[in-house]
Image 1 (cartoon, helix red, strand yellow):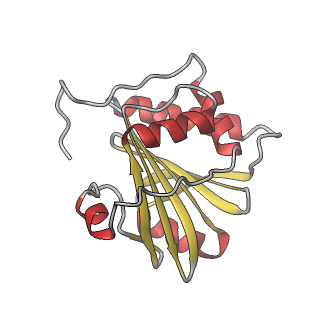
Image 2 (cartoon, rainbow, N blue to C red):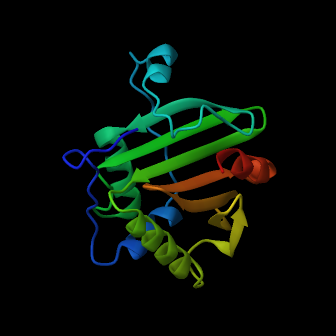
Length: 179
């Protein structure tokens, strides 16, 4: 994907974006069914290259983007925090299920800043997550936490802020796949 100055994603955040992002992480994500007229073939032809087709043996079953993804992210965060380009990918298969969130930014430094702010807030008690720890794999720094019956990983990659929520039994294989 190429970003041009005239079409690059812009970020719109409240003065305390990490707090709002954390509120979203505490809220249980409730998927909205895909439009009835969208077939699997139509969906696969419009999948951006940064969205994995499979994760740990689970198949991509739904991809939400555009206004719909922004609305879900804003609802989860109880505010206007979605960037101009957001994606929510749902995966299912015999090993379990996962949700892969991607928000695109126009400044890679901001991606890292927002990731670190989330980690700082999650490190405090009372946010619905436990066992937060920084990790490194393939020279990528990422964070891992447990909560809501799943393992949660988040990391910055170029202009992407990625959050992966995945069933615990397949969590380590899933993070290996996406890194």
